[in-house]
Length: 354
Image 1 (spheres, rainbow, N blue to C red):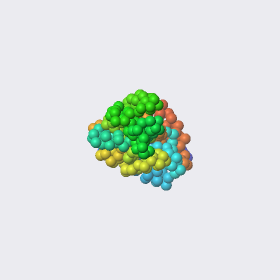
Image 2: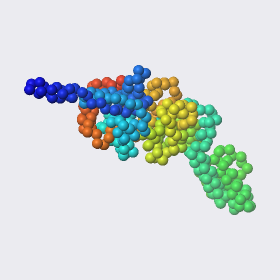
Image 3: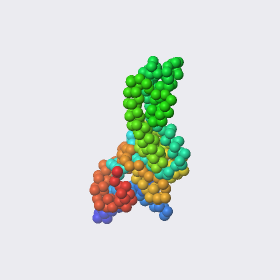
Image 4: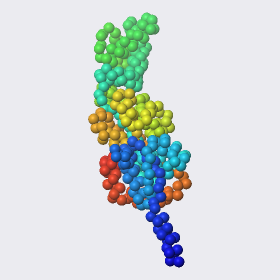
């Protein structure tokens, strides 16, 4: 009887000692959150978090590398039980899979080149800019208005403005131009009191207009020379934009109806920006910082500010029974000193959103 009773107890202890194996899909080439080391082991901040969760829940993990689209498909079809890496919680993905509590908060940022361009390219972009064209158009309209006023006042008492209407109006515009530019050829001048009053006011006004025009052109040339064509999210509509396919940045650009060329991975998108085939690259800030850390020679920079906050989490099926246990474990890990140390080791200052 004692032997018979000891057999079920031994089996129960053996079952408790056996850790259930779960298939975990890992996002490839998403350093510093998930990547495969040369020895074949998986590394990254998301992998570290999952290892801590799995250790606490006594799970035996079997990692499988996938890209974003493959990972979401694997979770939704049951080929993998969990998905980890630089995975953002998006409305589109929530239609197919569920997510755990966020394990990291980051944001989308804009990467731009910082390479001075040729003098001709700078001059061309400045002269064709919307700001310059608006100023020139405004000046021409104002010259025409002032010239018309000169013509109306002087046409009866000044022979230079009499004759055919088009001739007299042209003389008024000519007087307006030479007065504004302070050239003063003297071939035409106002003779009436009203004409001289208008000329006096126009002289003083022209000084301010020429100063504004000169300062604006100088600013445009300076900005085009030392700064990027994209200074913020609002500039993306007139720029050549690249992104990584199936990423949160690609979804954001599509939602905002912004045209962007997508590439299979970050390295190819980054190379397009460096080669001058793009004006801006929109991607996750932490991933951009990690890529630039590996290639410090690149003359590019991340613009300050965050386009949109992103929350990284573990992907799982909506009916996952361990969701509550996983979320509780994540909450405890995020408050631990060990996690703060790991986050700083992988991200450094980029752990904080700016």
